[in-house]
Length: 352
Ligand SMILES: Cc1ncc(COP(=O)(O)O)c(C=O)c1O
Image 1: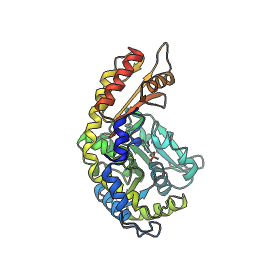
Image 2 (image 1 turned 90 degrees about the horizontal axis):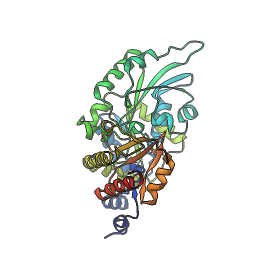
Image 3 (image 1 turned 135 degrees about the vertical axis):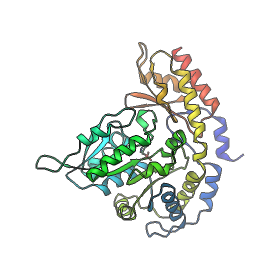
Image 4 (image 1 turned 180 degrees about the vertical axis):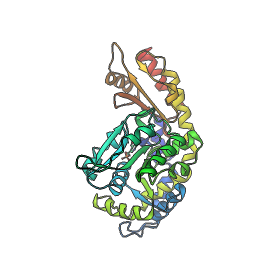
């Protein structure tokens, strides 16, 4: 048994905080050790070039760009598609709006226009009503950001129908659509819709290698060649140009090639966990929202606050996270059925 496998099997705690905590697989570690590398800023790291081409092909786009993080992927996309004095329509609980340290205003100097949604899906008619023409008082709307799956709506899947309707609005008004597809492979696994069909409805897509797909680092931005060429310059400006980064891209190739196939397992475990805790006092959770690997609930209890619940869980070896007014548990490669049983038992002991 290798050292990392030994550490995993001891399982002193069950980490449900995020799918970002996944460790690279032994195969990834081997590929990283053996990766052919070059200087990616100078454009000649062969492993990065392979990952970028593979990602673009999978999403049906002209080109791809390796990013250090999903946050940088989204930031660069917004920057590339917008100019100052413009506005971006975004779902009110979207990651790009709530959890990326105001990058839209800080990096791109554009105004986000957040709209409410049903389970992450904005109403296309409401989007259309909120599109603004430039005038002396108002910015011009230039971009719509979508998120699929929707993290802060419990990992819900945007339907292809909703995305098509949003796309039609965008086309009618000459707007671009950027898809935060951090977990687009989870969406595809749950719905059976190929990732390429979702990507077809957006001008650019960001997806993460380092979440359920288990690579240690990295995200991809894909889109038209000209957009990616410009994005490469913005990435450099933000300090995201890395050098012999084929060592990371090697894990990324395995992530996109091999890891989507196991995501259904995570979805099944999230469902089992949600069913085990849904009726416990204090928890408000709609089981129909648990479509993928995220269990997100609001917590109102006479004796305990959300922070107390998280603390009590932690005492029992179960790690959860507070997010946007709720408590979140995420299933992933490094939690198994025993971890789910441990979590369910801890919840029952605390609240039952
Ligand atoms: C939907 C979504 N978009 C973007 C990101 C940002 O990714 P990163 O943590 O790699 O910056 C996350 C991270 O959790 C996310 O959930």
